[in-house]
Length: 158
Image (tube, rainbow, N blue to C red; front, side):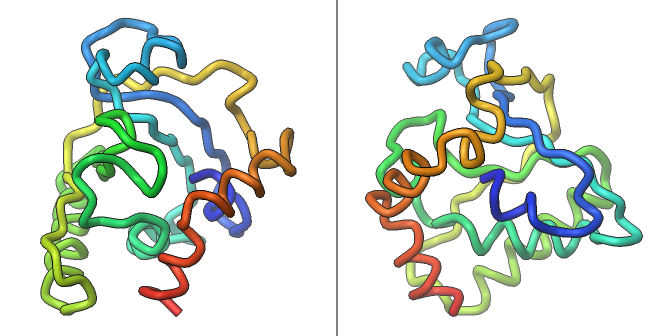
């Protein structure tokens, strides 16, 4: 989820990590088991005057399958569920509105299951997981090609 956001003016930083679980300072090895309750997530810092929160939401919806309750594409398990974590009531309202608008659009036949949740403690992932697409471009491209994500995006958002 880093690359789609990393290319825009007004995005100041994207950190890969984990949130929402019950283990303090989890490791990737712990989170990937699906037993810690964490979501694999990204924390994005941005300038809302340059890149408004609404644009962040719009871009996010176009990167995921919001109807999949069990993961994303070939990544299966609770740690891969989709969610939007809000930091204030305005963000919550906007996230819920975009979710309702997407549901009403008829774009998807299945219900939109992406959760809108209050932000919790965010734990930064290990260094090897930061900017993975830049550090491991071949592996990133191969994994993305196998995942089916690009075909999904093309089918629903082109």
